[in-house]
Length: 271
Image (cartoon, rainbow, N blue to C red; front, side, top):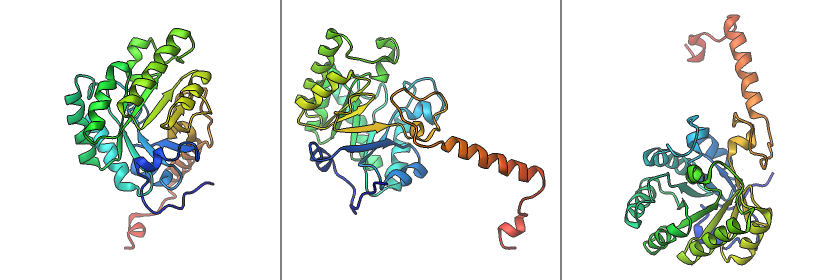
């Protein structure tokens, strides 16, 4: 298993410097338990707004609130010491204006201690990215399939499959890089287009359901562990059936309780 030997938290400039040197590894986390386990293995941890679906069982990411993101991000930061931590800005927390975005992003950084934020950013939001970066907030720009745009995009569909869609995504990438984004997250982007954006970009690209030519990869940890519940996306490889292990352990516990074979309270507390 790959475990890092570094002794300090990876910084955003160090993450950027990894482009062309080594692949960047990332997973999501929204709890202390998961964060502690993946901290020595990954380069950055993303507290995604996917927490709304994975952690709360909601139908989409749109209901995730700023306070919820802050709470989960603080838990991850407090439980880790090695991985760079990136917080996903929830829907409605940055789209209104650059000023609104700065107030909310600054609050996330100040209250959690995270290293950067992620925004779903097309060309219309590139000026917001520029506004944030100029004021000291590192931004990872999420392009391609953007879950917060699901009602406009008509569902969770691969992007960049047509010339028109490909041109739009390439323009989103260029605009956000020019605005100062330190990284691009490419979700559900056609392989050839993601490869071209990666080759053209001086900043790292992180793929999720995109080309293996991207500079790194991020996946939802629960999907990797078989804890996602619903069938995982087709691009996800499940590396373990942790869900099965949990079910089996709980069934054994339930059987022992029902049969009266469990420690009495006095034994548990040394009485």
